[in-house]
Length: 87
Image 1: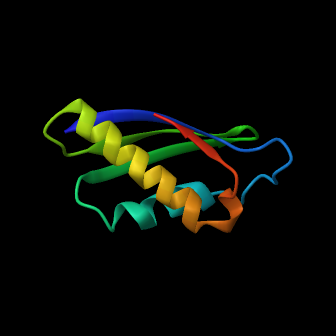
Image 2: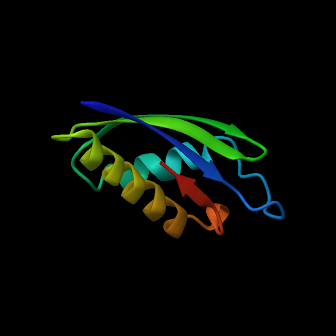
């Protein structure tokens, strides 16, 4: 299992999402994939920072899975429109 740190940044003019919205969006997408086991997110006015525990053969694959989950969560969640992810 690998631990992947990530940051999600919201546009300055975007509203701050409801508490738990980012975590919920990420967890909903993670359930669709094999690998992500646990996600912990801390929100802020600038976006969110978090860690994802991913079962993967190597760190590169774990980072790729984290990136996929984050990108899909952003794409599927109206509250996250325009957000960026950094893994």
